[in-house]
Length: 473
Image (tube, rainbow, N blue to C red; front, side, top):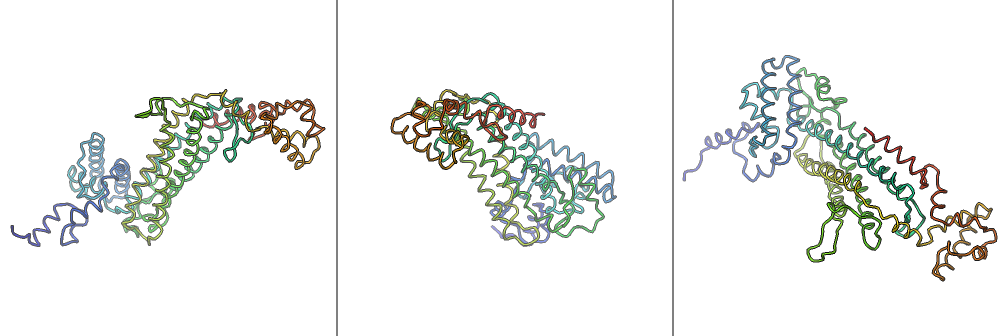
């Protein structure tokens, strides 16, 4: 077979329609195409790419860089492309590298030269930076709504269990009795801070890079503020070099996502423990569990277990993105193509996880008797006895020592503090009176903690109602 001539190679290369093909004398190898292409994963930004292009075209027409006819053609062509993508009829080509060139090539096929004029005054560098921000802003809004829903589900369940008592733990040892509602609201607080972080991150995401072009801006008299207003950005990026190379907004989102998943993972760990027959505090709905291929009795909490595992994945994306950016000089570098897959996966993971947890929390079956029984173990009201003595005028350290002796005596006898008679309790301290039995009950212990942040049923009710009001539509 005869070898291709240089002219043949150039013609073949030109036929591939790369935006930069005229500069080179030989085609890119198939392996390099696969290695450098991003269209397999960045096509998910297509709708946002089209949204940004339409705003850019509107601006170009407003300053007479393209005609009104060109603008109308671009709008018509983009509508058809969006329809084709939505219907699964769009032909994505690896030869065209990314979502931007695929859409541009199809636009030129549909409307001719008007499609070629669209790229006036911009670069793929500021185009992709804009697409990512548009896409991420959308994902943040979804995550914020899901966090609102999850907090609402937690508050609703807490309101049903303002007086349901379970042991509170430190070091996984019984510490003091708390209400189940109070325990649930701790997670509602965590997810509330997660929402605050995402909302704050959104402010820095919502700045327009378009107009920075490749790195230095453009000589065309563009109107960046008009584009920002059209796309509902709060402001424009103020430095062209920073605009095309900045990814700290993506790092910030990944950090917020990692914290969301960390809180999800902590909750998951407790759900797994609580569902164990050895604990038996709750049961999860069957749709969130699986069985065993060999042990017919098993009901495994697969969803919270898998959420724990996915937390490591999201944490890894944060580290990967930090590492990606740490050695890059200004301005845009091809390294930045690697920012997307981890970012996309982080957003997908928190979206799916939060969606499932909203449903799962709402379907928890609470086993209140098992919770109360567990709270009666481990001398959960020992601190209440110490506090009782302090209120009688005993220095706290002396009260602490007195109660420690009482606990040791109960351990030897195999009983609880509340099982001791008044005379036996007075043997540890003469100031103990009949009212001590109000203090040593679980209900008395939690009821005494009615300050802001406390576990008393009345306080839990107020806090749950506050969260429900905050998360209402």
